[in-house]
Length: 174
Image (tube, rainbow, N blue to C red):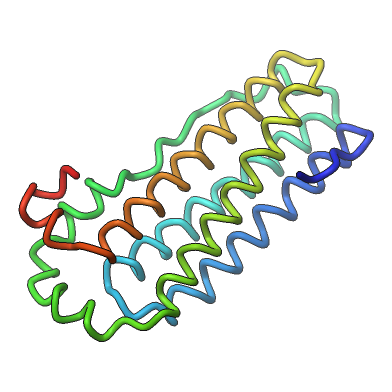
């Protein structure tokens, strides 16, 4: 587990760096993944990470100006696997055949993404524990929850890659 920096400013700077790394990873990995569902999911996660960067920067600016009370905390619910699956279902008629084309790279990309999300989640939970301001604590807890939702989404994608028939048979409600 990552050691938490000493100051709140350093914690925010590290948080922004984590989100930028996640954004870059998703942005560069999406075109490499062969499965269309996986590709769209990574594109969506890149957008979520970009949103996290913006939210961290907003809170960091408020922190440096002693105006954190003026920041409105908005939890962004990431799309669930089921939501993404339902939106793409009509485009996935060839998904079973497409899975035959996927290489080990798809699985490795998703597993690496899961590691990134897990690392961020633990870092944000530590930051929430260290935070003295209720608003900063809530902010970090909210982001840790969103990273957990990303992790869960990626885990569902791995299950889909392993046996997509379960998702087709159950209408994506696995």
